Length: 222
Length: 217
Image 1 (cartoon, rainbow over the protein chains, first blue to last red):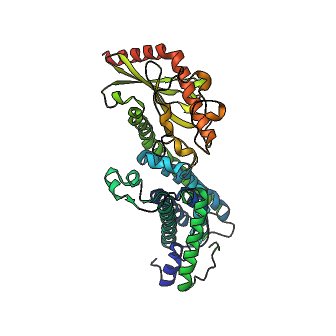
Image 2 (cartoon, rainbow over the protein chains, first blue to last red):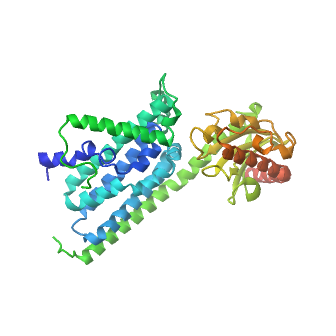
Image 3 (cartoon, rainbow over the protein chains, first blue to last red):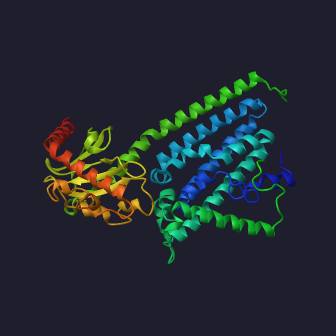
């Protein structure tokens, strides 16, 4: 079951080369909506990562038992249950943080990127490959969430890691950094999400032009 | 490997197993989190009670009695609204309403409204809202002082017909760019004062009875 070098390369592609949000442009709704601060982004990114790892790995383990026609229904059942559980647990443990994420925790269930992964990769690949690839997908999302959250928080609020105490407890409050810049309100408003996303895509394209291109063109479902 | 059509019996068993596991997982998560969520919600409201009391009362050891009242017309929701009556050795010192402004711009706004026994407002805070960032969210005292204009207002000051925003010939400032939000909050505070005016003695009696009931063995 040890992945070979090339399948390792392929399984980790969603982390950066074939990042769901930045290369395939999937699951953008929560990405654009909640990334007003880094902490919000981290919270939703982590929640999405947990969901996709469990859902995809389980789907991969079940792939021989399920006929193709039933696969989507089972994947949805699994996603709905997982997201409901994550939603209730975050409300119980991180109540105030849940308040600032609002509707977007329950909406993880309709993140097209996660469903695509649980359906496409899990139905064709081994459990180990799927697990690794799901982890890369989740972390890739997290990366996009953090990058966009940091940009918008710095430009819009002039802070970094504000609200960290909601995630990591009262003692971490001192990690919040006040910057002498910022206050450009537009960065926090919805249009700012699109500006930030555009800059992020430009940056990614710039960086990946230097590196060898992935064989899969962006936007291709795998 | 299953045939091209697949094995429907196996699929059924697997799907049923997933559904059953999903059911139990959700059930267990609900069991574990339900009371914690309710406790979090109460704690958040109680922690903020102090913020709507008059400064002299903040931090004093008052007895807090929670009542639930229903009055959709005045308190903004058909659901029971928490009303906290704060007493000092039986004497009512303040009443705090967890009232709702139902016509916020994006959704209903949950408010906390403190009222002194003589009927003046001692403080208003938005405890949960979905108002637009940068515009309507100025109702949050962390963002602007707009909410503070209600302090020490009463049904007679300004007169009842002036309990509205400037645009509606009232005496209250509106947040620029957030007329709907401002109107919703002013109306909710006015309606809560009307409710208090009509039910003050009833609230105090109920609070005294509830306090007596908990003190008896």
